[in-house]
Amino acid sequence: MTNKTCLIFCNCGAGIISDDKKEELSEAFKPLGVDIYELHDLCAFSLNEKDFLHKLDNDYDKTLIAACYPRAIKNMFEQNQVQLNNYEVFNFREAGTEQITADVSTKIDEKQDETCYEIKKTGLNVPAWYPIIDKERCTLCGQCARFCVFGVYSYNKKSLKVVNPLSCKNNCPACGRTCPASAIIFPRLPENSALSGAEPGDDKKAQGNDQKANLFVLLNERNNARRNIFKQGAFQQAEEEKKRALEELKNSLKNPKRDA
View (cartoon, rainbow, N blue to C red):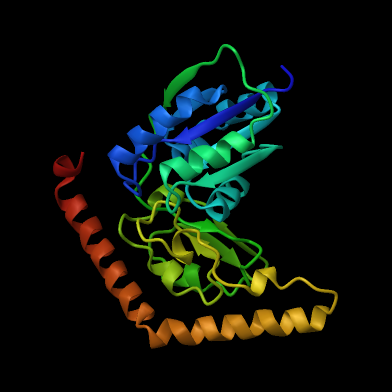
């Protein structure tokens, strides 16, 4: 197929947008004149259905994605080795239905006379939250791996990887709150913040010919972020979240049938 565009609509299972908004988006997308694939949901597909995503990449010249923060999706694809050659993400966390529909429409080069709307589901039960590493920001300090007690990460001084994403405990973004570089992302986190994928600051945009100046800006931002962690009580909040997650784990082990 050539000169064709498809739209992936993430029917997010984490509750980051309301069911009413998801229904509004679904109805607004249908007249756009492209094939639409409603995925339940994109996080699960990036972990468990990569072949389907790669097939879309082969079948279409362009893939438009209505989901959460572009930074979150970009790094989630890279971490899970999802290869899409030509895609663009439209953030439904912050933009309204009318704005997203208009933005998507401008990226459609040619409407199709006949289109499909397919709902796709995967059997993978993705936890509410699991971490994605923004490798462009990560300094390999290892603080997240040392803070996590659930075996989610593997770490040495030259490498940090998420090796057991589904071991991450719900309601425990604690490792991300301790990251001095804002390099940990939880795409399914309800709050709209750098921790859920928003751009952390302007330091990554400061691109110039003077590398020393850029390095100074980056280090300054990281130092400020590190200080802010303690000033804002984020570390204490992280400790409390980790404690709650451990209690939930203990309770689930005591009452396995209740959590089944």
